[in-house]
Length: 88
Image 1 (cartoon, rainbow, N blue to C red):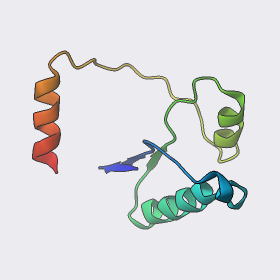
Image 2: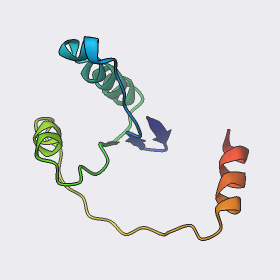
Image 3: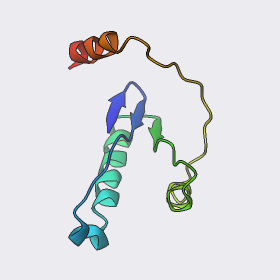
């Protein structure tokens, strides 16, 4: 997850198959949502679902709404990596 201003965004998730039935990502997501609420963050971004039905239904179960946006593509990757390095 990344936090920025009033926005939390999911980035990647992973789990060990033998623990899948325990839904570890749901537990982690729940704790992060609680943390975000405690910080007064207004926007939790599940990121795109690629129209995969299971992901769409899962996100809708939280009351998620689709938001359409435009984006800029970074043409100068070295600048992007320098920017990230300066942030951390």
